[in-house]
Image (tube, rainbow, N blue to C red; front, side):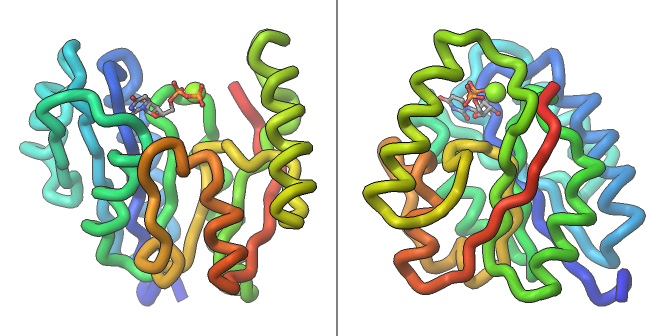
Length: 199
Ligand code: UDP
Ligand code: MG
């Protein structure tokens, strides 16, 4: 089972020099355990810190690290979109670079894909953000869910797992990364959610 599994991890990063090495090692650890083939696609979104240099040094040690570098900041949707185009594996995981998500949840997300879901969207329960962020977010989720009729609690979570078909068939630009589950559901894909912890 493990040997046949292939997973692309897509990581948008904008000024994330503090967390890239730690994120990379925990991802490597998890993917090495559960997948026969994997790649880490980092998109440096025009960072002005040392993010790109750190990514190049990871790439020196490990050819499964791939780097896409933007000359200037283009936003998370553009970064994800390029990552989705580059992804080669059967399953694609997106994770934020800021260490707020736990890579140990990836195996269970992949299992949910293998059991028939096309997209597994993280649902941050215990959210570690101030009220100025959580209240607008609750409103956003309620409105999005009501209008789109897609029944999720947390649309905007950066931590998601997809079957490759999904990322090759949705077009993400502008601020559309916040609505990926809606785009996927409207294309007829089976969208589900998994509770995830938030650090
Ligand atoms: N990010 C990006 N380009 C941007 C802003 C953010 O690639 O212009 C990345 C960022 O490095 C992180 C992810 O997108 O990996 C989510 O960003 P952030 O934590 O700021 O968003 P939030 O968690 O508040 O939704
Ligand atoms: Mg974040």
